[in-house]
Length: 276
Ligand SMILES: NC(=O)C1=CN([C@@H]2O[C@H](COP(=O)(O)OP(=O)(O)OC[C@H]3O[C@@H](n4cnc5c(N)ncnc54)[C@H](OP(=O)(O)O)[C@@H]3O)[C@@H](O)[C@H]2O)C=CC1
Ligand SMILES: O=C(O)[C@@H]1CCC=N1
Image (cartoon, rainbow, N blue to C red; front, side, top):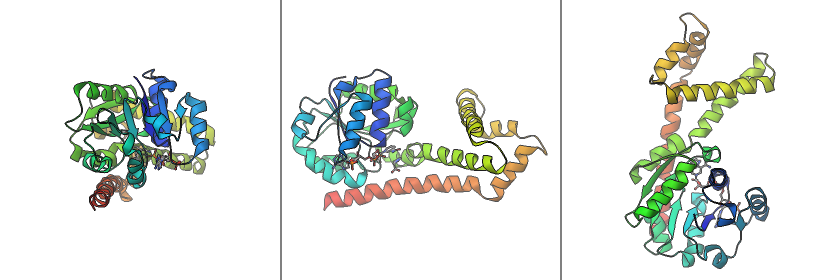
């Protein structure tokens, strides 16, 4: 891949950079990054991945083939307004911004651009992102393949309708955080049940990896797999009864619905400011 520019150098940018370099899709020297003002962060990324970093926009965008927008949605209007003179109609724009529509990006850039909206997750750093993609009609077949090239090397990707991206954001964009929340609870419980922290950590990680592998490889659904762990009158049944009594499954469903609604709200408030 030729020159790739990433505007925003936070968690998502770093996950993508580390995944792309690890999978040898691109070398660090062909990746150019910038952020708002955190110079130390850019320096640490240069050191860790061998990427190029600059605040000089002419230098940043000169000869760029692909531009990834990776700032927070609240910063997107300012960022796109600043970079719009440098965006060319043949540059492929990939936005990972939650909620922000393709239309809003084009309105802010004040030009017709090939835009792909992507919703990956931070597991891209280890090649395990689940990424949903949605493209406008200006994206060529070659650009589409280039985008698949990026997101398939950092995990698995699939094209969806743009209107489905809020739901994907609530489910798998934010998804790793829900699993980390569960891991946090398991770690906290370990202390209370008398297990040494470091040892418990290993058991927790292997249990999560094993359960994920079972879900991926087995033809059985999650409920069936859960039943197979649950002996009548046994330990799992006793534990899961407590989860049921506390409405934990319902809480997870509400959590994903609320995250989806927040993605929709972010998008609506962004669109309304762009259109004013
Ligand atoms: N984190 C995640 O799990 C996921 C995030 N996303 C999306 O990715 C995007 C980034 O999220 P995340 O990486 O977590 O955010 P971070 O807060 O970690 O990083 C945001 C980055 O944007 C930079 N930035 C802010 N304003 C500008 C600007 N005007 N010009 C250039 N850079 C700017 C910040 O620079 P500085 O540090 O100097 O302020 C920072 O480097 C969001 O839109 C989010 O919706 C999508 C999927 C998953
Ligand atoms: O929390 C967020 O808004 C971003 C989008 C998906 C994951 N992190």
